[in-house]
Length: 379
Picture 1 (tube, one colour):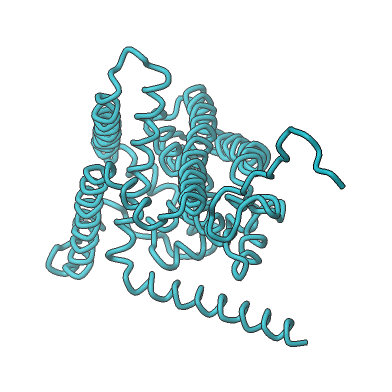
Picture 2 (tube, helix red, strand yellow):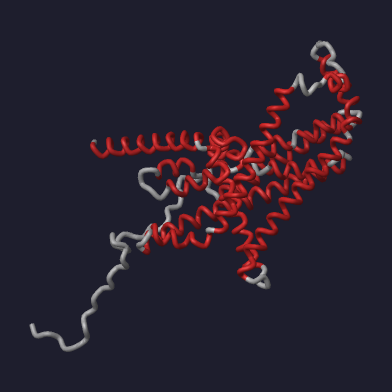
């Protein structure tokens, strides 16, 4: 009975600690969210560097990390260019879309027996910065907050990369015994592998969805098909809802571009089918094989981290949950949480040895003493 009460008390303490940690992370979101994003990017850059060391032996080992940083900056710059260039082309075509959009809005109003709305040109003419200053101010604050978040991420990222060489020394100082240090290294390596696996899975499935979506949009002749496909690829890094939201935009603009509705119907049907196949067949199988996460936990983690840290939390929800599951599995008092988070109910415990393999002081076992060969002692 006493053991049962002790287990209940321990589990209740762990649950309260988790709730308190969630409240603290929400309170310090402005500090911790950029830091978590910077750590994620640092792991990604480190993965690039290790891949180049393994696959490109002609690159000197000291040059692998600078090359990975340069590649990351180039990819980021190309992404900004693609979004900016296609956004400019889209806004240039906005005037041509306005009459068609007026027709669609009028038909929708007639369908629900409402008064037709004002023309878009009239609404734009009545728009005043002074009358709508609150909305403009909100937009400016949002843009400033996003820019500040990006600056903090870059600052954190620079310091993390600069201090990565000292990380091993800190591990040695924190875990002086060899067995403890080995277990900690295994835990950190498992976390790194989990983050890299998540990044690889989301990239592969995002490319699959984006390429298939671009193909159908190009066949139907949708304007800016490459931009919409690239946008679908970017938002696919947000688990579950990212791809679902991304594939809704092309059919909406197909309604505006084409005079008939069948192109939009075909787009929404095919894009939903692509997203369903990849998101419900390919992605869960890859996640279960590499991340060992329950699909329901993926959805709950998206809601939890999104509520705490907003869009950055939604983007990092799966890697953060993988990290929490790995760490919680190493302690007996919190292992039950890791079991609930895992896909197969058996989260990996690092550094576990057979009974008697290591002593409590973490010294290697003493070898058995063998009797010396020689004459037998008299009875």
